[in-house]
Image 1 (cartoon, rainbow, N blue to C red):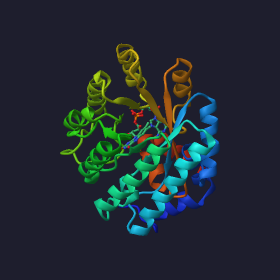
Image 2: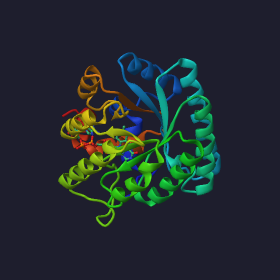
Image 3: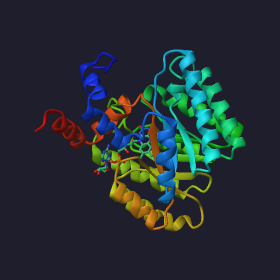
Image 4: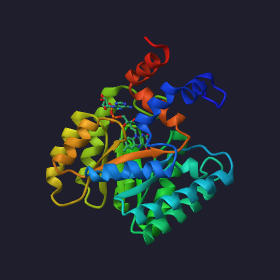
Length: 296
Ligand SMILES: Cc1cc2nc3c(=O)[nH]c(=O)nc-3n(C[C@H](O)[C@H](O)[C@H](O)COP(=O)(O)OP(=O)(O)OC[C@H]3O[C@@H](n4cnc5c(N)ncnc54)[C@H](O)[C@@H]3O)c2cc1C
């Protein structure tokens, strides 16, 4: 069932204290101010940051333009504060579900502004309805500006060939497992298959000299594999990426070992869809919420 504004579960989570407390574990806060403060703390601990203004699947052009303007503010603020940070954007937040050319214009504006500020823009990958269009948006903007990144979901059956096509374009490629529920024809569904696919694609990515691999997982076994593969990269850049609030122990360890780590830092009031994906990845989070809610 699609979760809508009037969904009782959504109302319960977004309007009660346990729901908001749970969200605060994964989200820096409602405002850019909150995100800047969290980014400062993360930078001080040795981690870079990627700002994610929460919001997705906008249904009118004005909302897409507002989101783009807010991201432009974010880029200027990063510069002003001297933060080690870039931005991650969801193409449907910039209009992809309404009109691909609107999303293209928004990404173009962001990439141009980022270029002037010596910064980069990463395209998050959403569900498989948007994969092809997101890849095309990346290709166009990366060819024009050269400062783009894109997320590739290891669970998608198409990803090995997408990687082959994207690696020569440079930029950075963020390899993640994939967070959306997808049909079996489109994506691998068992954990062992997904982990194996991630490992295979990681090998391809870490061998590539044209791109900067971003290893986006909290899975200790895959982090260990990436560590081993990093030895052969020599001086070629790569980075680990993890979500704000997830496995802070592992985050600290990687920084202490001298690896570059970037923390994906969501902020904004539209946190419900993001939170549901984090709960789905780890049912223990949902139990924590239920216990806090019902006192058992
Ligand atoms: C920086 C970054 C960017 C991402 N961008 C995208 C994107 O653009 N598109 C997309 O589809 N997905 C994205 N993801 C999400 C990703 O696809 C996975 O859903 C998510 O990272 C969980 O998979 P995992 O690799 O950590 O492995 P898992 O096998 O799911 O988890 C490994 C271990 O990590 C810990 N863990 C993982 N998730 C949680 C959680 N929610 N709460 C608490 N502990 C947890 C647990 O200890 C778990 O045992 C991103 C992930 C990261 C880290």
